[in-house]
Length: 274
Image 1 (spheres, rainbow, N blue to C red):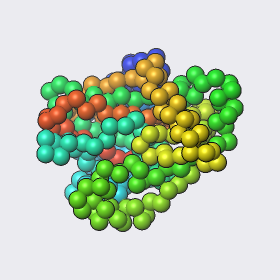
Image 2 (cartoon, rainbow, N blue to C red; image 1 turned 60 degrees about the vertical axis):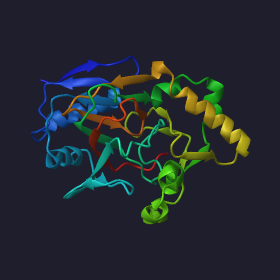
Image 3 (cartoon, rainbow, N blue to C red; image 1 turned 90 degrees about the vertical axis):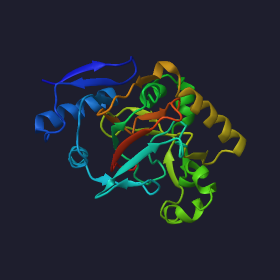
Image 4 (cartoon, rainbow, N blue to C red; image 1 turned 180 degrees about the vertical axis):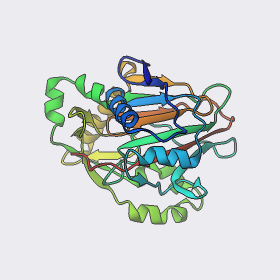
């Protein structure tokens, strides 16, 4: 029996009563997908899944995407390795949705913890549904119909500036030119309105003067991280997080240097935001 334990008022729930090392039944899949839409991010503990099992679980939600900038698990090009060490600490600090530099950003992301620090290394998630609901009616009206540019190069500017970074990522830059997405999009399953700009990949709002765009984006980037819109998850080895990339943003808390942290992530192909 699947049991849900909500984590916070805005979003997030821990799920018990299911073994992810086994294939999902149709009824389990339907219930988990329903819980994902309802809670926007769901967590499973004590799930020692293999790469093949992680891929099979992600496959049940739709076709899989690969990421152009990260190393992958041998034999599994869909599984991205997210690793931070004393020699190569993580560079991602900003709130973001995954891969919004794509025409079709992920429907969801599935993250499995392999190595976690003894303390620190939590991750925050924020509900872009709740963030939208807490805008004034005048601001909702103003933002509706606007679109913004999302750029791979903006999100990976630190990597591109490293020695050899431009050469290493040249193909990724070529294959991922800037794309345009609505500032407010409609979730295709819940039907709810969602804020869809993030500080990692969004560069500017189309049709506004640069100073106007900067002011609006700075307001939204600050607004979305209001504590009441968020939840926080403390990792252990063999945890699995599944989040709706269409309606959330997340941020790692990098408070564990120089400890080692390693996770495996799969992103699931999504629709073009509208």
